Length: 428
Image (cartoon, rainbow, N blue to C red; front, side, top):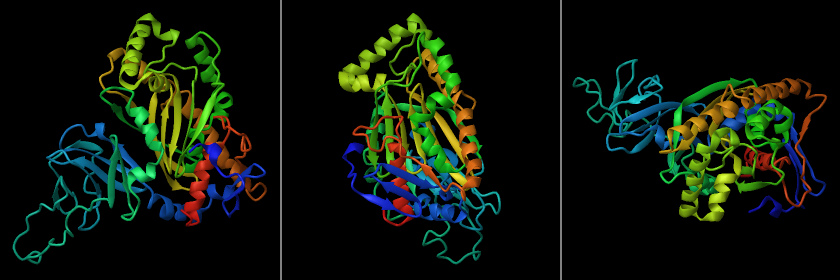
């Protein structure tokens, strides 16, 4: 459904948002970014009930591979067993609670808790032999000594998600129209996509919702990232501006995306002069393969248009000059941990992998043109909320009365906030 299909007659006023569609006004209470009680409610109503991104299948390429990850504030083991099946276990020993696996990643047939030595096969089954009489004969008949699986684990085209709510809707139902974005991403290459390198971790002294807003906010790009656009103009041999025609997609359930033809090169199949003539011919070959496999219209959309996508509550996929997966979780109302990964086409040439990573590091990486700018902007906003008694509301009304939204409008953020408010008020 297009965002233009929303019933504009509805008006909603809550402790968190003012959504006046008739007048074209949307406000968000600044207390949502600073209040401890609101964060406690978020942990219960959102992070304990929504599908959360866990990892990509390419990170566990072989049987017995594992990695450990904090997902929604809880420690998790994500692994494959001897038969290659994927699992997600709570990384806490059922005996006395210590983390069972303390390494970030590896390959192991079993896991062993360092505290008292309890061991587990990599399918989660308890594997420690005890002297007779240590425990009752029927000990673990109910599985009490096995590793605890997460309540729900599911994948969509190699992207694995978990849910701590056993009664949650299916992943496909939850993703709704965001599946089309993941489909386009996976269609970049005939053999699919893979995570390149490891996980990048950093923290931001700001509320987690500010990073979701920022990640698909086209309005801030020229002002906040002016240095990058000056640099880009040299690389492309002409003016570097945000695309004149963009689209905003309401992907349902709080998910949204912006899409447009931006000035940077795209390793999938969009050439820029800085890459040289050799790259031009290789890109033409990639484009022909896309057209042959997907048809011209779909191939052109994948090759030429970039997308910034937010999947509620805390997954960002930016498919622009390179592809980044980013997820984040609040430590406090004014502090979050961020994890990010680069994603690339399986089997692409060494030259194109280099161009992809150069693009990624230049803009999307923690030390690139964009991320330090964005971190400063978000932390500045967080400091500004100290004056919430004098100025209690943020404005996210830009473009609200337009018949068709653009990336420099703020409808994509309104999609997030409507879902967030519904869940915080138990309306979801």
